Image 1 (tube, rainbow, N blue to C red):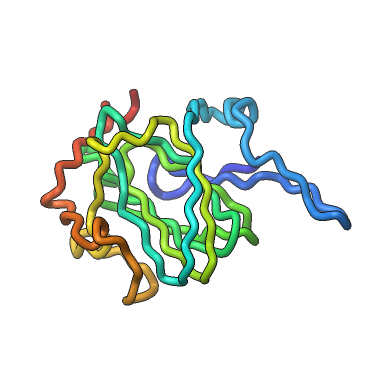
Image 2: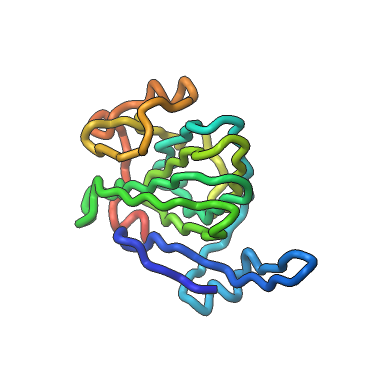
Length: 188
């Protein structure tokens, strides 16, 4: 597995090795042993799977507040998404900065998103599936969202019309959010 660092500290792209022949392919999509050798020691406890029927379906910007913040390991297993990660750690030098990367069933990349970051994904084609692991269970009382088109973040989604849930449409802007991430509480 190869790892690439992105501009936000701790956010990494993982590229598993694929072994292909006339039958198809084989890959080890996740191995705690392999990741530990690369300094990634998260214990993932829940797998999630999402499906977006239509191009332009946007989910996010989501996170769980401390002390139930989640590290995510995410991959697109069908179709193509624009994956966006926003630094929400108030004392970070990259606070409010964001990165985006295209994940697809073709490029087979995965993204590791540490605690302290908001996350969103936008389907770029119809019939898209995403699977991801988290290291904390879903806890509704800590579940938060920031509106996807927050002018302070100014994220370039590459399209003006999106399909979102009511929750995501009505989410607060970052300035009105109760996000409670710091560098210290996200490194625990």
